Amino acid sequence: MSRLLFVYGTLQRGRVNHGQLADQRFVGPARTVPGFRLHDLGGYPGLVPHPATPAGVTGEVWAVEEPALARLDAFEAVGEGLYRRGPVPLAAPYEGEDVEAYFPVADVSGRPVVGESWRGP
Image 1 (cartoon, rainbow, N blue to C red):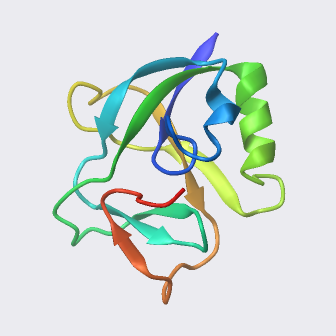
Image 2 (tube, one colour):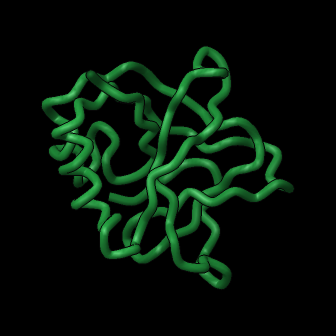
Image 3 (spheres, one colour):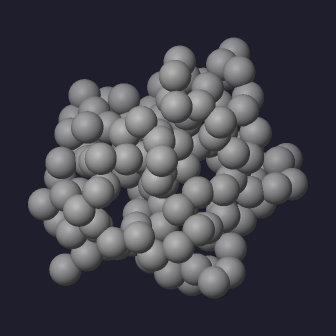
């Protein structure tokens, strides 16, 4: 059984950590609904709800099998409290779908705002 995962940074195709998803199925490009933005957390981004942001964040949707999801949780340091995995609302054609993303746990205020698209490695 697979779950849908929205990735928006270094896990995307062509990015430095994409190998973590290489054996999973790419579903397609995606965008969150308005009200989200990215912050630079020091070489990687963090997806943060921000109601005043008119555009959504661009990324990709992947169908991820449970063993790979556990591997990604470890990679994203979910157990150590760096990120948490939770639901994210996406725009069409994914609206209403059960999709998850990784969100930073720490307060990101004061971190540079990237905007709607990650340009890093």
